[in-house]
Image 1 (cartoon, rainbow, N blue to C red):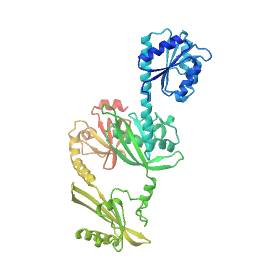
Image 2 (cartoon, rainbow, N blue to C red; image 1 turned 45 degrees about the horizontal axis):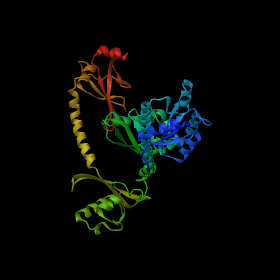
Image 3 (tube, rainbow, N blue to C red; image 1 turned 30 degrees about the vertical axis):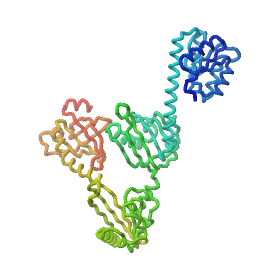
Image 4 (tube, rainbow, N blue to C red; image 1 turned 180 degrees about the horizontal axis):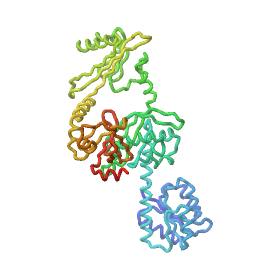
Length: 480
């Protein structure tokens, strides 16, 4: 297999052809000489090792411009670099060459050092282009094999790449979407929500984000997606974009909503749910168990709780829980348990299986909520400490609810600035208007301005943190 770059020499002058042949061989490339345009096209057809063409312009029968035009009509030769060699001095000839697709233009007589430099440059550019195309094709292949919608965005929220499933859902081509943002493609409300999630990664440094969303289709319908986003880092470790993978969970969402209203046992659909799930009849016999339950307790289908080879205290706890549900009650237990890798927290929920108000059995779900419990503990501690920390700030700070459009917390500096010396009288109405990063605040005809320091979720509510200006003259000037 040939590893040298192949260079096709097209010139009707045998002396020049031989001269170029020697130069190319000395540079370490493989020369392919051709005396006519037709011979050059035949070599191209028979040989796929050509990386660059040195093409004379003035030749009998088929001149260099005709050869160039013929080559550029074939998409297979798009990546081949073509340097025109000619004694023609008119600028119109150069314009025509570049218009037809020439990569470079060198006038005869040429300097051997300049020719060598240009050959090396174009061979290098072709290899860079080939590597780029190879990486792009690999990316296309990876994206196309992922069972969902896959997108790659830049740090300015523009679409860089996506798979065919994404384009098909929107009924738009890659040429239309590439370089655009969500604001160019989706309705305002949807575009805003998608940008907020991107902001969490690009601006706040979130390592991974997973959420459910409704995604609009071109026909006016929508699908329910489970979306996971992660940052893409450049060579300096900075976030340069976002990769997103979304799975269509429309059917699962519908089934989940109906799960507690119907009597159907959804064993086939919940096999891969990553927590224990099971169902028993009124006689305490197991009717269903998913993979996670099987891995924990072995095959229990058809077996009675009391006949299982497990500790008696676990049997009794299972039976007592089932009896509670058989009486028509739901049961939820949250408890810690020491495992081999440390203390874990679990939540177990049991609900009755009903048909025409008759209880046929019960099903149960057991989830490991250790991480959630730890986060809840840290959250409660932070909830106690945060107000004290905010009061230490000299700048006035207001936390504003985007849902109620009202302030939900103010530090001491903000209270003093807004209400003055009589801080006990806070009966007036406060209005806050936010545009981009500027907040305008009015209270009893007083005017204040502030900068939006951040938007985040707190207590399951979207809140806005505003740092106010304590300079009243600046407030009045900026407000107006």
